[in-house]
Length: 486
Length: 33
Image (tube, rainbow over all chains, first blue to last red; front, side, top):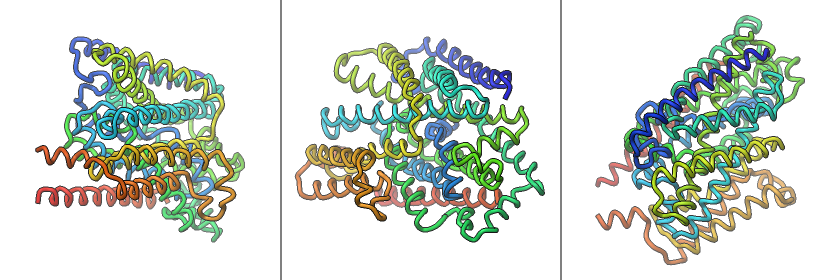
């Protein structure tokens, strides 16, 4: 792709990001609101909130990950997107509303009230680390996409993307992210829809029938067109993704901070009708493009990682490649911005304000958030150069927060015991490490040895928490206490 | 192929959201009793 087109794509993002950022930062200076920077003054409305929720958890894995999964497993890859629909249902109807009701700024702040400062601090460190891990993958993703679509070097593209991602959020915080997300939503879906229609038009017959015929010609490939795949794939991919995505992101600061910024609980509840399709339908386009790339031998030979992007670069006209690149960059940047803002907020609120300066003003907290974001993005750019595998890394990262989700839910509605909580966290985290970095899964073998990390940490969490809570005494659930007090 | 997948996915999303809202509605009613 010509350098001019690349410059045009980044210039578009640059103008939108700096335009909105500077306008808001000037406006916000006039009024020092509570939680103004991190939580948009808790004033996100019925449009910005659901769109930001949808795009905060839609990034590299939705594009590159789904392209790659579709190549080897077929339509079942759509369940990566559908797992996010389940996540948004859970977040909009339960955890998201609860964190908004509690009036907190970070998830560890809620756990501090439930399990004490020690456990809350450990969770704050792990959660910030987990989100930062996703940030390194998003940095890598933006590098790979720009590099494959333009011929630019991955590290240069990652650095440029990193700077744009930083300015997506550093000037005016959550309010800036919300407005840019709404503007970019049009580019994201416009680019994807036009690219898919154009690919269909240049295929024989002007539709996707030849792609369908390719898979129908071989009976062993029929499952590739089935949204439910085979029973084995459904268990490993669909259910595995639902567990990992829902129970990790359902409590992660990455999504919860958006809910905390809502104007009220009702907007979160009804926002589900916008957030779920906006996020979930993205996968349809990625899967169709992935299936098409595999059915065309000239692109299939490039392998799972490169087939779809190679096809797009070669089949689309220059202007449409540029529009699609803008759509992909915008999608990654929206997640990038949230994975940058949220660990910085956890550091500023739970470590800086919680441990060192309890009387810190809103302005001091905002300054700390901005400094931490600069440090985090710099380290993410360095790590991204090592190119860790995206899907494997996400599976491992997501599994860290599964015990936190259940500690939160059981601590709200059932019972709270600090020892049981500490044992649950320690055992499930050690198991997560062993499952990824030791030969234990291989030596177990069979169906169990092949299960993703999420199954293992979920099983350990539920067994220890349920048995522990049944056997040990503890304080009643947080909401039970509140109801009694009322 | 595209239209079928589009409709199937959209239906799955609507069913998921609908079931979620239904469970939430029942839970709210149960709480008020």
